[in-house]
Length: 332
Ligand SMILES: [Zn+2]
View 1 (cartoon, protein in one colour):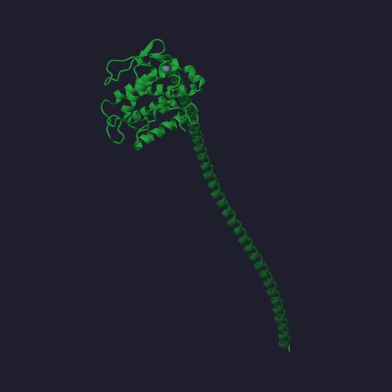
View 2 (cartoon, helix red, strand yellow):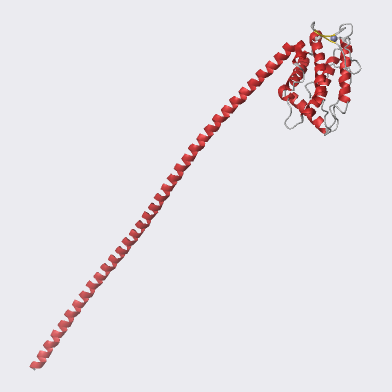
């Protein structure tokens, strides 16, 4: 919802129909941008030219928007701002405005405040309806004097604010409209300040209020930038911390990989040792086997020697016996 939509306020009374934003897609889009940024409560962002947008399109959409705001605000006062209460269009005791449009009324005339506002709003409406000034179709060029016309419109809208603040502020308070009026005027001031639409001399009737708005915005802006700078410093120190962690991490990884290397070479040596041990065992087994075989052979040899000895003995006995027999035989 637009910040400036009065919604169900019973005091709402437009004294002329609301003007629509330029009907091109661009106009509708920019109007949405205004409502969205206002909805976020950030007036400074709300007045800035959105990135990539054309300045004249932005001025045109906002001119219609501010015209409608003043229209609604003054509409709440029409029964209190009459030729009787306000016989002249004043802004305090020091400023009085006389009407001239430079076309039909060339010599300024003194009129009552409601008549002055009527002239003024009629004149603005004629400008907004003039398609050679405010093109309705996207891509139609704005005239060379567009900015001058816009400045005159804002200068005149300002006079309505000046009259309301100086003459009808108490009524606005009793209608509980002051917060709304202040927000509208703050938005108006920041917009005209941003694009330098009103000469400083023209702002004299409300200069204290305007300066407090601008100072407050500058302080907010300063505060915002201080916070951004602080945030940036925090971010940088976090980034440094992360970098340090990453360096430490890389160092740890290096140490780990070195340790893994050492451990794998240790594993390699240990597996070599295992192999050596295994082959030693193998050799020991073979040696034992060989010893076993030697001892078996030795015992076989001993057995065979015994057998041979026994046989030789037996043979020798037989031979001796036969010799004896032979001797006996010979002696016969
Ligand atoms: Zn008045």
